[in-house]
Length: 272
Image: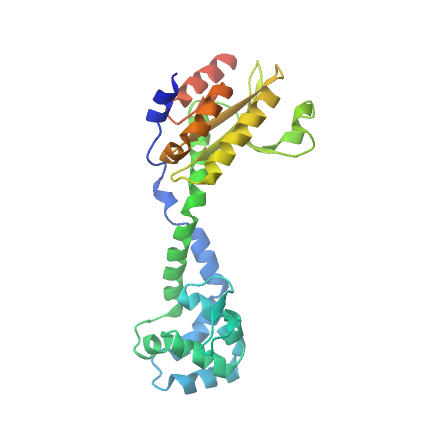
């Protein structure tokens, strides 16, 4: 198949309905701090929010340790304080005066007093959904792995997932560095070591990946009983077309989601 045909086959998306939000992770993150959030619910509707903060701090100062998530910040980070100093965000959470400053300066105080938030557990659940969208980039690759696995299963191709290279000590050319292959398929003729990925957007990562696989393929393919296979897709490759072209000319078994049918046909023949 000519390279321009391969490029023309690249798909615009590999997103399925479960791609957009990992609700299991969202629920887990929210549940971990739900007790503290329920305690902070005491502040909702209080007209004198500063006095309410002092009362709650006397009862349970630890509940304020989760204030960062109320402004959609998951981890500690540096900020510029009103006096111009650079401080860490969590320095506001262990002193009642600093807590009052944080809640007022961030605008949370008015939201609580006006009851714009009815329940902080539900509110944080929504924040976690929003923050989880940042993980979509990583899910693209995982989604590709799921898709390829489903293609193997649909075609009754036996495979193993996440197999380390030291499983095959005969591959001396790989050296001492341990590599993890996404899939391994063994037929009556040879063992295929398979890498899978998907790129929606561009970036240096694509060039690095193409370069790495161009390097590793000949090291594996020199053994008659093994062959390296790369299954990749996504419009991101249009920004790294030259490097992909080099890989295409070096790796005999390089497929996308459309041309993978050719690989499946080979596997079926070799499994007879």
